[in-house]
Image 1 (cartoon, rainbow, N blue to C red):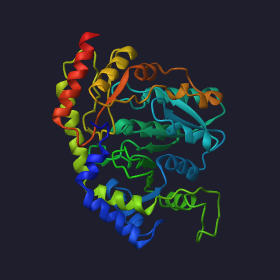
Image 2 (image 1 turned 90 degrees about the vertical axis):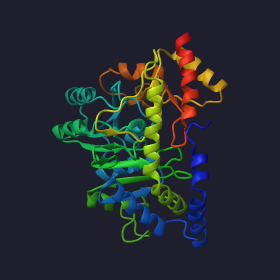
Image 3 (image 1 turned 30 degrees about the vertical axis):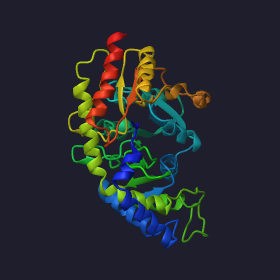
Image 4 (image 1 turned 135 degrees about the horizontal axis):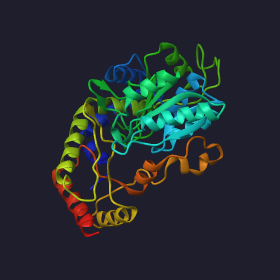
Length: 378
């Protein structure tokens, strides 16, 4: 059994993916070219925004967004305390100060009340200017973007949607990566829409920012690549990865639907299981299920569960063991209220189970039997 079954996905779509790769190789255009242009157009249409700018990875996408806005020293960037490191790493990379906010226990996404408390604290107790809210769509679930937008408007801030795990999710009829002033995603292989290496994309309706992003991602180019008008970076999506993503986009919605069926199966087989808290998807939301993450009673139960799953050749993972505010890289510039109780609790009890479009009902039954066996004994 695979945790995120990329191998079976490839086997199902081998001919189309192989042909796309071979056509790119035979064409001998490996940087740029029509596959990249077509992918950007297709992604923009899928999300429902004017501009998509591809880049080398999801971390670069976040950093490029901050660079396009001129975020730097003296600016505060607000980030959920429970997320992958890159969501916060990009703030000090451009000279800004990261400020972490606690999360909502049900959805694992940023708590809007904790977010506003941190903004108020920074305004009242520092000389930092609150500039950006990084709204992470964690585990495939869109953040509470309606309320986040209200807070951003109230304090005159940008919303940077980190949709690295959220691509394919929806709120009503609106798709993830369309909620931020600028939104980003990652095409890391295990993401909902993954390539066969690294890749990322940036989305915005603002044409001026889009032009700036296109310049920044290629060494700050102007009229051509030898006309450098600003300091940028080297962050381009390889043409082969674009060709792979174009093929995968054709069946992407089918996979999102399949992942939701798998999530429903987990919900049925674990519905009355004591000591297990299942993930919550609010009414009107659709998750793309980058991960299926549950909470158990304690870290000791989690370790026992993972050991028993391993004995049955069932993979499991922990996303994430350590809150952002406890990462050593942030110790020298940690700012804000010391109020992270939910994140600290979740980090001690969360465990992620296999999730992909290719998890079968028999797989789910087997996994849930092990889960029930462990939590009923301990």
